[in-house]
Image 1 (cartoon, one colour):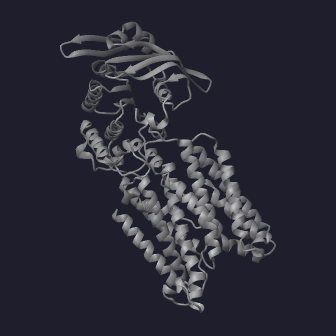
Image 2 (image 1 turned 90 degrees about the horizontal axis):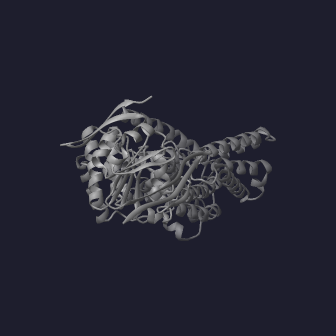
Image 3 (image 1 turned 120 degrees about the vertical axis):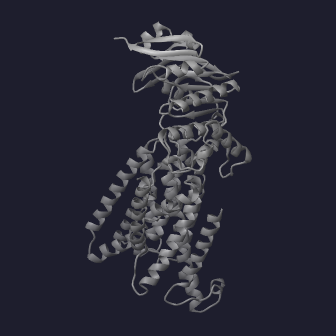
Length: 322
Length: 252
């Protein structure tokens, strides 16, 4: 309970912090409510969508990461494992390549969502009807590899270095220069995904004891897997569509918070969601503070911070096992 | 009152008939030891009864809706999976999952059930230890406590005492026998025939794809059955210390 209050306060603080950081200084929270002039405009049209997207994407990554680790009973699982983020990225890359992205503001996100939908359809088809987790991992790996290969092909066939550059920069993941349109595009899908993932807690708890024991405790494993895949696809597909691929949050945050919730998968869901939001908001503030004039990509920073953190956690786990 | 009834249950796995036309029933007050050589189908029989493997025929458990079944029969699988480093108390509380709604916090009744299960398995002093750091036998006892905490009339366990030290083997068999005395039903697959004879109220011997013998321990562990199914000889005596069973030699 104390953890809930603590994490919520941290997220709220970082959200407000995210509104204050930028080249134009801080316009005061009242600027969000209304008023004319450049400052209220910056607050409402640039900073607010950026902070909201950071919050939403962080929640999504943390929540789906915790759900995925709980379902696969493996602390190395992450939301990208089912391949949906890769196929969504492929859709976006195709949109950039064909010029759809520059012709229409919604071209890129919608193409990414189409990629995500295709990815979900493929993985459900590949993984088969029964509720096993092994086929899901294998199908996810195959799908990710396929999508990555096709993404490379698009890069390979890029008409000029600038086009390739644009694709590479987009793939690093960023929240810069997003608008409320992006928020409204992602929010409905994410809410559906959050609700779906929030219902998996009981099943994930039971799965701690293995698939057989969970099934005997009244958990419908087929439905649990379907809920998990669709929920993850909704939040991750929408996230990639508006911000590109942001790695390591879904992997590190659940791992980091697990000891604080007595390792109960159902409790980890909400804790990890809040933790993910805090991490993305903090990282997005950091990219603006570290290189105010440059364009440090959010995905690069989360990987730069996340990977060593993960190494440290592995080291700690190893010592705990010895 | 009958807790489980199986009618002509057959299981075919990968074109191999594992079980053919098995019929039996288990009532309240019975502690049934399911015995038989490796591969006789003990695990498969229990999993089929629970609806965890596809089967033909009828099982009273699979006829129940999923949620209802989970409140009627608890299942302890042979593989002792514990995915996360939780403490013993939290692990045992997982047995209450069928009784909780989606986000409900554990009630006083849930805590009482966990307490009682820990008491029975003599694990109160370990309740705050991290279960993944315990020894294999201690983990097994925690998982038995988890199964008991589910609070079901019927308890089914697959080799529950494998890997336990002698004292805890005997204590665990006594726990199951007590459950039966209290009017619940227990089915456990066992390899230790000596303990089975002393504690079970009834033995079911599986062999050749079906039930070979079913009844009181002395009626099931006859020299003929031991020879035909296990391929062993044994000494079986009624002593002042209760029935004693000791396997002796392999018959080739």
